[in-house]
Amino acid sequence: MARERERWGTKLGVIMAVAGSAVGLGNFLRFPVQAAQNGGGAFMIPYVAALLLIGVPLMWVEWAAGRYGGAYGHSSAPGIFQSLWKNNPAMKYIGVLGILGPLIIFMYYVYIESWTLAYAFFSITGSLGKAAEAGQLPSFLAGLQGLQETPWFSGMKAAFFFFCVTFVMNIMVVYFGIRGGIEKVCNIALPVLLIFGMLLVIRVLTLFAPDPAHPDWSSINGLGFLWNPDFSALKSGRVWLAAAGQVFFTLSLGMGVILTYASYLRNSDDVPLSGLTAASTNEFAEVILGGSIIIPAAFVFFGPQGIVDIARSGSFNLGFVTMPGIFGHIPVGMLFSFLWFFMLFLAGITSSISLSQPLLGFLQDEFNFSRPKAVLSYAAVTFLLCQPAVWFLGNGVVDDLDFWGGNFIIVLGATVEIVLVAWIFGADKIWSEMHVGSNFRIPRFFKHVIKYVTPTFLLAILAAWFIQDWIPTIMMERVSSDNLPYILGTRLTLVAVTIVLCILVRIAWQKKKRAAETEVS
Amino acid sequence: MTTGGWIMFGLMWGMILAASAYCFAKVLSQRKDADP
Image (cartoon, one colour):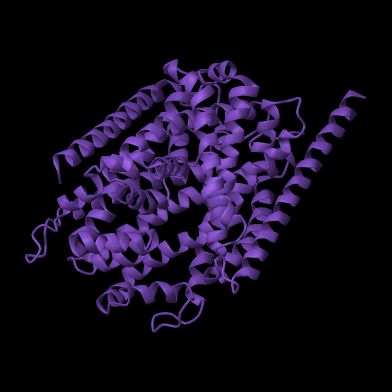
């Protein structure tokens, strides 16, 4: 007998969960660096264009398509895609992208998330403060990751311990289900995260210009570094592509998570309003909080030239090396260091729990697994799948997983999804589906955006990335010969996981077919 | 920060704060009679 499907407890709860999924480490680490490197204030023009032409329309499409599939008893992309195009048996296999993408991201994201928990812990114990005083923050990070023998850490013990703690926390949250686990945690974690972010913004903006030798190194001029527009940057296609990419990644689009979360909606839920609220919450965290912490703080202490060099060294250096260094220079800095890393941890965990749900929903709906059985199976498999990221970080495994899960699959998945929904299922039908139970009318202009502009935009991004970035990565042109076995091993694992998921889809549909035939006879 | 910087900063902050406030006000007003 089929179980009754889980549902969200409240309208606000689902918005918090979707916003929690979207607000991740990238809001605070990736966005400010992207904006500063791509025209500052002028970057916001392509950013807003991409938000209106790709981000928000695709978000509405995913919410509506997810709820539509949920009405057929499916909560993951294989079943949802199949319900959108019933006559094409290949759709359930294409929908595997919507389980595979989140699974691959989970394989490395939980490990990165565990560093934020570790840094929050070491902020409180004082170790991070001592490393900052000794000017040894780069070796502190490398030591934690097990990449270097340092006075702070020996081997992988600390890294593995914090990974296990973070992994268990993730599993415990999803164990309690949609309403009792994910929704409850997001209802608390997201407001706390936003409050911590606001406290940090106030602290950074009230740093003013602490160094009398450099009165122009002020927090306001730091904001200027991010916001002063360089309109000549708009002539570069690279800037438009970077803005579209940032919007795309920040909203958790194309990876199957929103489809799954939306499958637990009721017909009385307001899709346009809820989608827009989740998107605006994400933008608040990204532009208002993310844009006002890391760059202005680094500018105050390192000045315009220093910040260019720091930004070039990457988002992780800014987050894990530069920021604790800055906190080491301000009164009660380790308290702010704790707020910073715990805020990142909350942003991380609300995202990583969402990555688990597509596969859990698949096991529950297509194999009729109970929640505990699905979670324990998921925990056993993903614990093993996470190990390469933990142990072979220095061999490029995380970067390769990020390329496949966090880049290739989600862009491909989103392109397939928008073409399927807007052209096969039909723009008129999805438009009606979006407005079921809604008091909020989306301007009709967006119907044409969904049908023509979003697919064209996504196909253009897909083509540009394929030529510029993907071919060299797929061909392993930038992989050193030392790392080659590790990257090959990672890719073989991903191929095996894909094949297993396709076989599971086949078994599930065969079982359903047999059950339906038995019922008829 | 230049005048252009303040304009971009003000526009983005204004737009996002207004959109967030509007959306949450709407959601909270709907919640009273619709939550299960």
